[in-house]
Length: 199
Image (cartoon, rainbow, N blue to C red):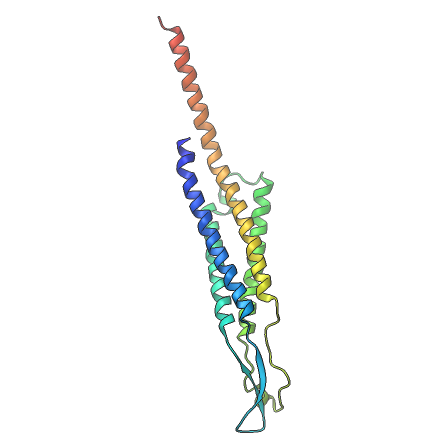
């Protein structure tokens, strides 16, 4: 049981770190959704053209930060578990394989939403009316729900990553614990036999 006792605190520490990073990225994505840039058409005081005036660009900063935080969390899971093909024999475990696939699908989806939403949110159309030689009617803004979709994918990714890491830890330590217990039982039986055969 010594091997299990020494490995379990590290597993809990990593799960806590992974949860912190994922939840931090989730909060950033929620903040990006709430702080999406909004623009309004205003006339130019120097000529008769119009342009878009945007209020804030904080959503782009939140989105890019969440992108890298989520990337760090996924890289940590991959490094610790050494990917599905290099780790213990997990190919026979349906839960591990399903969690591994779901983790990467939700990760890639969330990252696509974050980077796409950040780029689109940063696309400002100031002076577009001047270059297009006509007055603006509306301003280009990010569609509502892009960062919210990324936040939802992050929560699913967190659950899938924790399930995959739990399956990996179980496969990595279970065999050692079983072998250690068998050795202990064998030595106990040997001691009893030796004691019984003595004078």
